[in-house]
Length: 357
Image 1: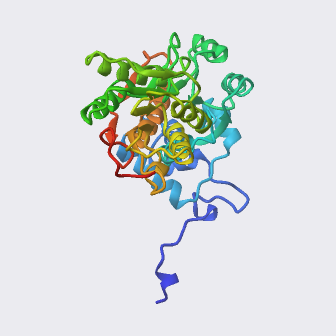
Image 2: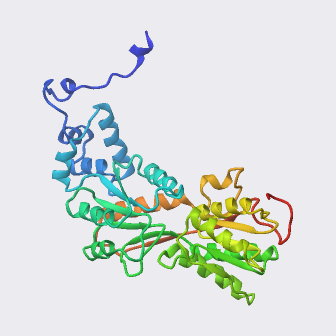
């Protein structure tokens, strides 16, 4: 017998309950074959958590056997849902966000949901919110919310299914998933203090970003316990800001011996400018970032940084949004995940001449 003959034969419409070639398998046929209701089939297709694992497996097996492809428009009309989740992303040129998007897509795999994407901005956020009211998406994950977001404030008044991921906004009542930025900032300071640094700086402490505010808070708290106060740059975190901040530091008669950057991209700007201006890292300046994006471990940077658990953050956000879609009236929840320092080559004792120059 050939390998092809050995393969299980997929059922066809003709073989299903006497259907003719012109007829199409529907969710009603799938429900009958699986011994469940059409509602259960719809819940399986939408990724609902109201279905037991055994029932889901049985329905999925029947769906696979008959090669069932649901009609998206008809399904939305019946269920009132599109099986689509919107994601609003900020600063897509920052590698942190593509990594986060990939993690969200992986977390959605097998859930029955698709993803549509908006880039954050004055026009994009209202458009994303409008997509919920027009039932173009079932819910939205915001990855880069900022304090001045009227569209976001308005959306939460109507209990729209929203999750704020990475950042939160004061006064916005919805599910949130963040890293413990305060403890991450504190850990960054404690690491630098343990190396002997007493003159420290913070770069990118933008007051409109919850992440930056909390990271600065934790950093300052740790320094205050030693009677120290950091030098602060309050620009928006970016590679360009890191470069400009290092230029300013290079001209100081008594510059900080270590800097804590609000994200890795800002730290990369500092490292690049340090090389340009002939400063040794970590000898003349220790540099510490936040996020631990893939590039941080590249030999060019080998950056000491605070790691955000990106995969776990995405998984929590997708789970919370699915639960919110199922039950829009439940109380909002907040998931706060652990951050930890990852040691590499860009931090050391003040004056240590090992490292790059």
